Length: 116
Image (cartoon, rainbow, N blue to C red; front, side, top):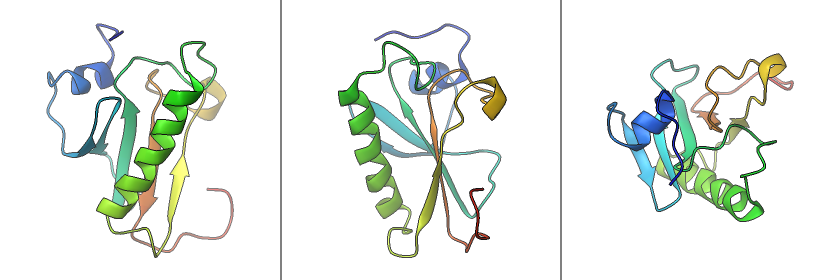
C-alpha cells in the first residue's frame, strides 16, 4: 500500500493517529470528522494514498468502491432515508486542505437549498 509519511490521513489509516472509525474494509476507512460541520460529518478515505480525483493512481474500481462505502456509511449513520450531502474538495481552488482523496458525508439536519 502506497502511503506518504507526513500525510495525516495515511497516519490515521495506519493507526498512528486515533480516530472515531465508523466503517472499514480492505480499501477504505470512514471516520468522524473532528471539526464537525453538521450533526453527522464523516470522512471516507481510501487506504491507498491518492491525492485527489485527478491522481493517475485513482482507478475506476477504487472510485466505485468509495461510492459504495459512502452508501454504507450513510446507512450506519442513519441518514439514508432523511438524506445526506457528499462533498469532495479537489485541488487548491476548492480548498482541499489535506492532499489525500476524501469525501465528506454530511447529514442529520436539513440543509439550505443550493450547492453548499
